[in-house]
Length: 447
Image (cartoon, rainbow, N blue to C red; front, side, top):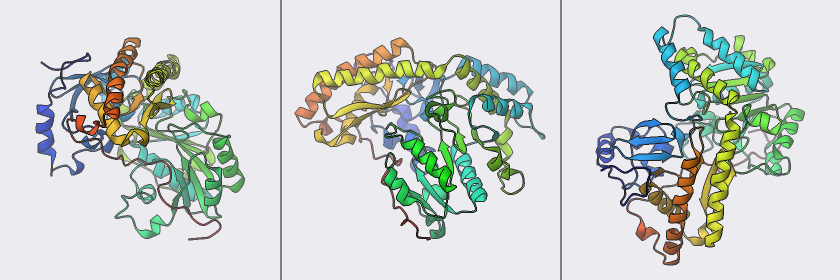
């Protein structure tokens, strides 16, 4: 019998998942289209590898096991799987068509909706992925300023300009690598030392799991304005979650450009670039940013329904309420047990359970907790990505699971048996990095 979202007697059977995995080996590089969904981020041998369906905050794997999901498709499902109003909008549009030979009215309607809810949305463009619009923003910034260098802080996709600063930069010409540099979050000195006269843009995730300190974001914004540098907010994670108007509304900062994708269409593929008209108008004749599927109507219909629901139901407030229960509840359990090596941090809409090295290898500790959460019917990779479909009973069950698992973790740590307790290959280091991951240019030196 398949496992459910209950205190199961054993780990889930994953024979069908493993069979599909064997078929993918050697056929699909890394066997996944998204690293965060792949087997390297789960205990290989315990965790399911393929999901077949989802409803609300629940998913079912190909073997029929049910899980409460705290990854929500790695971010896009702000409302939940198969959300009725969004699915109805998709189905209604499907009856009329998907992609057309001319523009579709939804392009105007969704752009107008974005202008209503996003502070900087004087102009709007649509595309399909986050990397599309961050790259478009970089090109616009270079065109607008006449400068070449980019400073980044966070994760911004797979395109050459960004991936050049990571360890996976083979195939990126050295000339491209020489134009992008990094600075450390909450480190204003790091930011200032990275600036020189040839910086076109600063792009950053406004927050990940660390709050801005000492007015960091405002200071960056002020420096960019003073130095004639375009400020770009990458709001893939913060958009429509921290507030309806994203981080720019939450922190009261209007960036020159902002990019969105996750959360805006509840799983349908769409991305958005918003910004000041004087910069965005360069797309008219000077910059080329066009794509056949930018006006695809199913995703636009989903975006209109999703954003309307987020605004009308004040979804960010609900995410804050439910996420706060998870974050404070986890920390209360850990503190009661004297587990000083683990804490839940971050903003309530998307918090992170982390482990420090004082109790052993953090990845082994994470793998142990993940393994035990999966046994109890919770798909978990260290995050609480909360959706509008996570109910009070879901939160209560999750905390009861932590109450059962964390004492077992404590015992395993004390007996130095965490690694021996794993029933599969532990979680591997994630590619995503947010600080200290390359070099900074020497201030004032052109390269």
